[in-house]
Image (tube, rainbow, N blue to C red; front, side, top):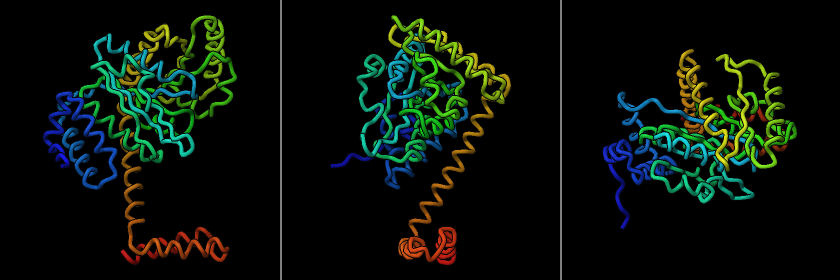
Length: 333
């Protein structure tokens, strides 16, 4: 016999009290494609947002970098550092599963052995098999849930350097780029746009015989960031070095994150960034909703198929084809 879901009130009370089981169920609702689950999830989120006394002093940090740079190890080191300072930490992922690898970036929590079992931490992989847009939207909503569950810092891990980084940037306060001690080689392979988004650059794995190389790389990356256009908030990207394994440099990185937050709060950029992100996600939700309405129309599938044949045969331009389908939709609402 299938158990009934908690009510909106039970979800809200459970989340506010920090109940990890209820929080997990609420996130599962957010990730579900079933309309009744989506409706319930939105009711829960609306109730949570309606509480103006809820804790608002949270920090959302994107952690990105090429595969193999040590993102999971770094996140565990930073997470444990924050827990020791009395914080509660949530780790989420933006990871549209590859159709080829079928892998999931946080599917194997054993890479964060200490953090994954700590009662003050919450780790949640992204749903598998989703499009980037779907995963990003669910991650955005999950951020709201974990913040209302009392987690002070939310760390967003991305699968690599690409479109998932742009999605992460659209929902976080701080963008942290991890690099390896390979002066210049890795930076050459990273899109300039990703580097421009970085608020903090950290050269990871600065330990053992790689310390000297890491310091050289740090100097190289610092010179490279000076060539980037200035940010509107006046913040010059900081370049630091750390060892996630030894724990060195983690405290300095956190102090830099706090300095970034403090400067942005003082200038009003912190609040403006969140307002801009909320507007972006409103537009995204509208576009996704309109697209769903369009393709659910009973006659669209047949009309679109017929127009596609005309376009593929070269008898109609793609633009005229699109206009034909849209006009059909508008006249048959």
